[in-house]
Every structure is written in C-alpha cells, then in structure tokens.
Image (cartoon, rainbow, N blue to C red):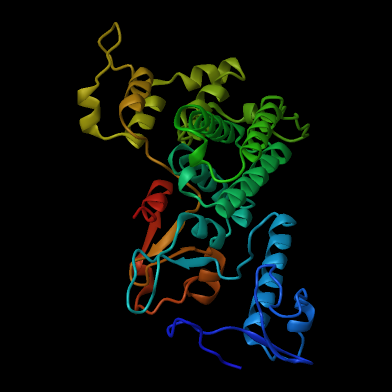
Amino acid sequence: MPFLGKDWRSPGWSWTKTEHGWKRIIFYGHELEDNNRDIDLKQLCSDNKENLFVGDVCELAITKRKKDFYNNNTKSQFVFRDKWIYVQRGSTKERHGYCTLGEAINRLDFSSAIQDLRRFNYVAKLFQLIARSQLTNLSGAAQKNYFNILEKIVRKVVEDQYNPRLVKDLLHDLSSTLHSLAIHVGRCVLVGNVNIWLCRLETILKWQQQLNNLQIPKQLRNGLSFNDLPLHMQNKILCNLSDAYDIINVGQTTPTLQILSEDRMLWKKLCHFHFADKQFCRNLVLSKSDNVDWKLMYFTLQKHYPMKEQYGDTLHFCKHCSILFWKDRHLALLFKECDHPCTANDPDSCLMPVSPQHFIDLFKF
C-alpha cells in the first residue's frame, strides 16, 4: 500500500495489515504507532509477501549471517574454477571499477600453486615483496587470505624441507614490517583488531622457530652419491646453480667441493649471469696479484644492482586481452590452446612473462 510522506521525493512508508486496519511499520527496534506491539519479523517475512521492503531487509540479514559464518569457519575466502583474472586499471563504459591486489591473490589460486615446485619460489618471492611494501594496501579479507597461504608455505617447507632459506627471509621481512607499522607508523594503518595482529606476530615467531629447528634427515641409498661423480660433472652441476649461497653451502660439505666452490671461472660465470658488463667496469675488484677477484666482485655488485631472477614457472600476461593467468604447459601441449579465453589470432605472440615485481606494479593505480 503506497503512501507518500511529507517529502514528495521519499519512497514512502511501509505498512502492514492488521485486524484493525493498516498500521505503519517503524524499523530499528521501534514499535507500531497505535497498539505499541513489537514487530514480528518472522510474520513480516512470511510467504505472504505483503511488504517487499521488509522481506528484502530480512533476506539481506540472513545472507550476511551466512557470509560471516562461512568466513569465520574456512581457511580460504572463495574458490574459483578459472585460474585467470582480468586486470582492469580503470572504469570504462563496459566495465566499472578496477581489480585489486587482494582479489588477484584470491582468484589466481596461489594456495594450489605452492604445491608445484616450479611455482613455489615465485609465490614465495611475491609474498616477500608484498610483506615489504604492500601489506597495508590489502583489505581485511585479503590479509586473512595472505596469512592462510603463508601458513601453507611454512607447512610445505617443514614437511618437504624445500628451500627454507627463502621462507626465512620472507618471515623476517614480514616481522620487521609489522613491528615498524605498529610502533613507528601507528596501529591505524592495520586493518582489524590489534589483538589479531598480536596473534599473527606470535604465529610468525613460532614459524621462525620451526624453520630454525628444521633438520634435513640423511637418506641412505645403496646407489651412487654426489661425491662418487667425476670432478668435471660435479663442477658442471655447480655451474648450473644461480644462487651464490647455494654454492657456498655445497662447498661446506666436503673438502673436494670446497675447492670446486672457490673456482674463479665458476664465480665469473655467475657474475656474467646476473650482471651486465657496464656494471663490472664501475665496480672492478682486483686481488693482490692484479687479477679480478670474481667472488668478491659478485658480492660487491649484489649490494648495488638487482640480480637476475630465475623461476621454473611464472604468471603470464596477455597484452591483447589484459588477462593475468597461470600457463599450464601440459594442457598447452595436448590441446594447443591458452589457459584463458584469448581472442587473438596468434595468442602466443601476445603473452608476456610477469616477474613478482611486475605483478605488484600491475595493481598500482
């Protein structure tokens, strides 16, 4: 029953039919005007549908309770079948709004990506960059999803003993960022209750203790070991390592590997892999015999220039469709198709690998 109020622009009041006639409904805990009776929401939201406005209010309240219950009892926010996302950088006539960093983390399913060894280092490096500078740009739900995925990363390292040093650096940067935000910047930049962040700091400390106490068990095998290989094969394996700390750790195992890890040609190849020739001329390091000390050169250049990043698998960005996605190589070989709905004539020519820093730059507006 429509009725206009004092303001002709208002949508009108809401009414309900009683035994004594039509009575106006007052919401938010107030009572009916005449009989001073409390509003029975179940009666108003019945199948009678005499008052559509009250029915919508009850439906929204029920939906909100279900959503709150779901978010409080699940580890991940949502589950999507499509492992790609459209990167919207602004509003257009066709699309309104833009894509956020937290939405991309959720839609690209990093929780499943860490189970793949080719993608584990990529996700861990991306989470480390987010911990350094982008943590305050995440929403509350995105921060919750971030820590849930981080918990799975730590669990995989503890169970499989895979690359603990990278995750240690990630937790160290995350802990330093949270301490600086809470002490120097202020608690207002952190989304949520301060007790939640205190619990997260305690959890990070517990994870750090687990990684520090991690011991890799020795596997007894009857076959050949790494030390049984010829020296030229051991040297070739060391030349394929792109991380200097891995070479140093391998050299601490046996005296033979110690000699191989100090080889000048090994460090020279490592320097040429990560840095350009112009950078060598600006930071030339010579030994006492006027020869280039390539090992010291590497650590000198590391302080001034970024190193070349190398990952088994990365995210790809389609310049034609503006879609960010994981490229499944097995499906690409079988069906010769991309992993996103591309409309280009030659989809492979439009693909571009995305580094972790480039991934974050895509969502800076």
